[in-house]
Image 1 (cartoon, rainbow, N blue to C red):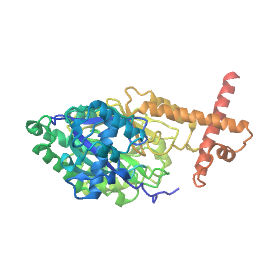
Image 2: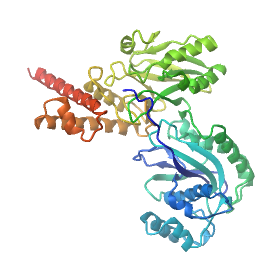
Image 3: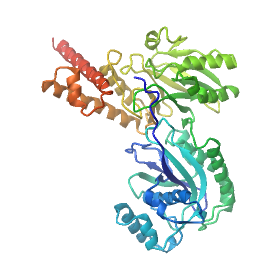
Image 4: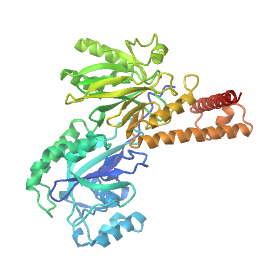
Length: 520
């Protein structure tokens, strides 16, 4: 099925606040509820999509009404999520009154415009420093065009988890926040990373000029905001790749993959010594930005050790040959293309492999500082016989390829797919020591890797029960079973559902034979 022309989601307007404490020494972040479908478990700044009523509120010192709604949205989201009311004349409100107004807003008893009017509160653009916008990559099934604003937390207001969307809000120094990201203790999206990196650079200067209980943003911090703005403007708010941690870059490439996914994640692991996993696109124009990134590495003297294909499906190979050719023609480098032996045999005549990767093989790499680290290649069949995952045990980060994904579902299609093998592979992945996060070949990274894998196992076992129930009810073919289990499914997707049922039937038959053999 070719879905390369499948449209990406249209970005929704949103606003976020980079909230600093009074002396500008710390910035507020919180963990998004892991149950959220969009970036669940990620650490982020307070924010969310703008509402139509946001247009109704006038903003002082802002002549652009269209832009004013983003400031209003930022103020409203800040109040909704962490209980901070960043308005003029707000100091007259007691803590109890703010809590009561928050309850009125969340319950729907009062709208935000009604609250501001009733209490003579106003929003002033001078309290906010615009740092540009960032747009969620086209690979995401949910996308936002988010405007970011720096502001200072009003005196005597303490952020708290006002709703379940944002957990454990805390003021933290940019240095400490980046250290937690470096150690893979947290996941953060690129706009947060860019902002934290810039704030860390400017915070020593801003602290010298910041004044307690003063809403005015210091001059050094304004320079910091301007630098973030320039970064946004330089790339028009578009992000080509995501640094999952300092060791791993995720580079989504548009491919002919299965919906709802539109892209396949290519991974660059390491810096001074690195590998490229799944340069999947066969379209050279789609690879231009990837080439530009790896070129910048080579020009710094970094070494690409190999180009890896995780498995045989067509949305995972094709670009490796183009990348290998690019390295050879531009730099005179001969970089081997590698895969599991089963994958190499399956793609014989399509891809020329120079190296085979074995189960539990250690791949030694170096980070940006030149420090050595390693990832382990795991042979995890089920989705495909030669399927490989890659695990950084020190950071607890698993690249799960197509076994577990952040967008869509995993298809197990016989004869290449085997559900018994797949469940065994999931069990192996779930029990990896120190497992924290994972990122699959489609969609965003997953914060709770073990929890997500357990969900996958439970889902497959529940589906097996449904297949057995359909058989006991009289269904005789995979098509009949699929029609019962997958009701109201789009006709063009139905053949995939049939394949999934066939995988379950094969597992049930295999389990039955194993039981009979054991009892005989």
